[in-house]
Image 1 (cartoon, helix red, strand yellow):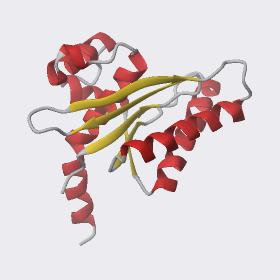
Image 2 (image 1 turned 30 degrees about the vertical axis):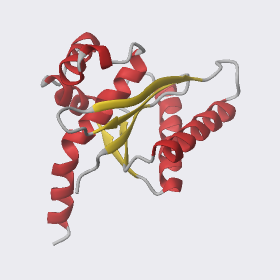
Image 3 (image 1 turned 135 degrees about the horizontal axis):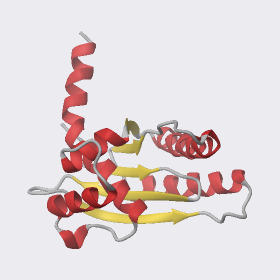
Length: 170
């Protein structure tokens, strides 16, 4: 009934956090997590193509039922935000091409899901992940850990979102 395997994504152009998290019987399980880095000297279109290719391959290899991605919040640096928006777009395109539904979560939602606090620090998020998964299962790479947090947020929120969609369809 609910998604049991999720590809979590912390988007960016220079580095993208990626994770595959399974619902598990007792607690969620991180099946795979890594940070994809693209060469800073590469043209933007090549960096985006690399992101698209890797995400496409991950979707085919791991067969998640959903892709959860952190929603971009536009801050003061519009140029940087535009790069992240482009990366998010190619990730979403890869999911659409694979027939995998995409769910976006604001950073506040992700932090709330993992720590119970919407303005949690990165260190508090890591500690929250350790409590949920067991400290040994938290990725060392910050972007990969953020991707795990996004996937966990989806596993927590998916039942609520499905109920909301079912109610809206009436």
